[in-house]
Image (cartoon, rainbow, N blue to C red):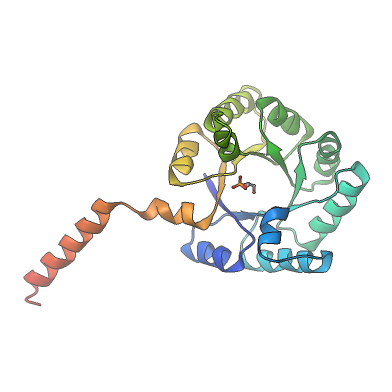
Length: 219
Ligand code: G3P
C-alpha cells in the first residue's frame, strides 16, 4: 500500500519523507489556503517546492470547473514537474477532462468521490487515482469504509488499473482498515501516519529491555 501525506505543509512533508515511507503528497485548495499560499505564482512555486522534497505523486488540484479551464490549468500543472498528478473534481467536465488527460499520458486523481458509481465513471474515463473521502462520509453517519470495499470489488471485477486513494483519513485505525480492504493508497495527515508507531506495550517493553540490559552490564 502506498502512503501519501495529505498536507501542503513543507515541514510535515519533509518529516514524512525523512521517515522513509512516503510515496506522495495530496493537496487541495483548502490545504493550500491553510498554509497561506495564495496567488497563482505562489501556488505553482509551492507545488515545485513539494516536488523537490518527494520522489513522485504530487497531487495538484485545478480550480476551474469548466472543461477548457480544467484542461488549461491541468496542462500547466503537469508541465511543472513529471511528479505532478492533476487533481480533478468529480463533475461532468472533470470526467471529460480526465479522459482527455488520460489520452495525453497525464496522470489524474479524481477527487471528491462519495459513491461507487462516481468511482466507476472516473475509472472508465481513465483516472490514475480515485479519491473516496471516507472521513467526510463517516461525519454524516454513512459508512466510509463500505465505499472503499465497494470500489475495490468493482475495480477488481473489471481489472480497472485505477488506484483507490483513500482520502479524508482521520486516524490510524482508518489506515489499517483501508489496508485490510485493499485500498491501493492512503493519504493522511502526518499525525495519523505517525500514530501507527505507537503502542503502550512497545514503550513498556522497550523500557524493560533497556533496564535489564543496564542491570546486566552493571550500569
Ligand atoms: O485531500 C482530500 C481529503 O483528504 C480531505 O480530507 O479531512 O478535509 O475531510 P478532510
